[in-house]
Image (cartoon, rainbow, N blue to C red; front, top):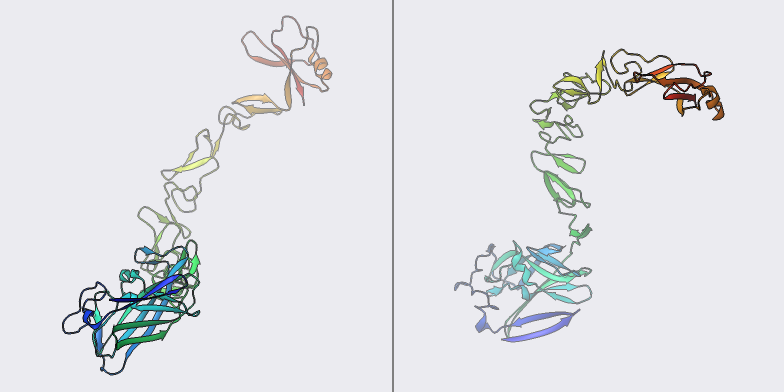
Length: 393
């Protein structure tokens, strides 16, 4: 076995030259059947006249072939080819016999990752004389390479050299986030990054819908089941519901209220029935309006009896004029406790000394209850325990 080598852009292109005597076992692959058939390739008979021929169909970049990722600065270029053998020999289809030719003239040898392609040319097969097949070859090349052609060179002996070349146009992948995508065929990035076709395929960057789907904008949807396009494009199903047979549907236990599926046993806007909202400070429990924690039902309202002037401490207990409700009791408004005056001093005098006027004077009697009937002008007596002045603010 003779090996001829040459360099191109840091890549080593290896053309394997075998004598005809070694052709049945090519580069370690299994030998072809004795009858010169293609070893299981999908093929059809071609009149055995003329040389070796190639035709490129699809060519694209990708970051991964099967489970084999490309190097960070490279991309795989996958080229699908029709190969026609009009020679008199059975020809091997080893990936290393194919080259990707760049516009610069540099060549990149077929990559072993070809075997990971579902449509890759099988390494252990030969293409029989007068036959053709269609399969793909993977090449590893710089991400920015501009390829112009693919060639196949087969040397079986000193006088048996076969070569074919075909022009190729590679579809470059586009960066979508952290991955490189083919926008002309990627169902999740069809025509643009993150633009999914839905129930269909991406062909030429456009959504092609399945038989049971319709195109709504750029996405194929099933109008019978899609909750955003129920029965027609842009006609959503009920909020919280689903689309069944092209019609909005609510789950069991839910009721349709104003184009929404609601649980009338808990929904505060539809409590017990549609359009029956609960009142302020209330919630819906078991389809009935119930006052929230810390509130008490007084008439038709839920109130906080610790601070409500109309229901201070209990329902219907109204604070007198000048008083507010604090902790369920009447409290003078617009006043502050100024303290206890000196014996013989009145609250009027104490409040005036603080730049304000007296609102009330009180003292705690023997029963411990506050009495507000002491005049502001009356002086504090020694027997008045807990004498308190209240000054306006």
